[in-house]
Every structure is written in C-alpha cells, then in structure tokens.
Image 1 (spheres, rainbow, N blue to C red):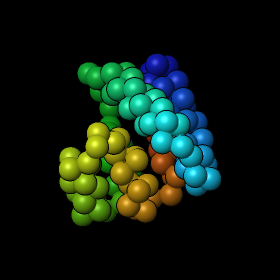
Image 2: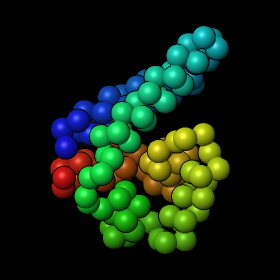
Image 3: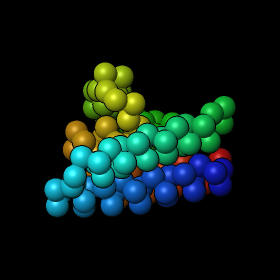
Image 4: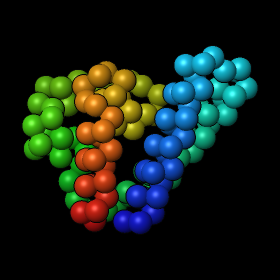
Length: 113
C-alpha cells in the first residue's frame, strides 16, 4: 500500500534525524516535539496497515533467518510492556537486528500488499 510505504519512509527519516539530534544533546522542548511526531507517525502506520492481508514483520524476519522464534517473542513481550513502539523500533533498541535489515524487510512487506 502506498500510504503505508509513505508513512514508513517519513517515520524512518524523522527517527534518524531524532537520533542524530539526541546524540548532540537537544533541549527538552525539541525532544518532546520529536517524541510527539514519532507517536503520530506510528498511528499513521498502524492505520495504513489496519485490516490488510500479508505477513507481519516478525514472521518475515523469522522466515529470512534474521530472528529465531525466541528472540521474536522477547521483542514482542518488550513491545507490550513498552511505550507504544513499533516492533521494528523494539528490535533495534534491543540490538536484535540491524537498521538496514529492518528497512529492507519493511520495504519488502509494503510491496507485497
């Protein structure tokens, strides 16, 4: 779906920009703006995915051999306890996958639908 792909690309751009700014040390007001922007983009991504068929991100990563079922369950558990993050964000924060693998898999997932 085009809406999903656009939302994913926008999200990834802002997430990367936020990481750079955060590493430099940013004021709380700017930090809060990024957090709000990312939360809004997560909502758009979930909305674009709502009701669509196709494999989920975790399934694709297990099929590709990037993750095993145990690591996927660990990430899903962390996601449930977390702050509304997308699975890809949780996987990155736990260092279970590399960013380039995530982006490639998300692009593959979006093009399947």
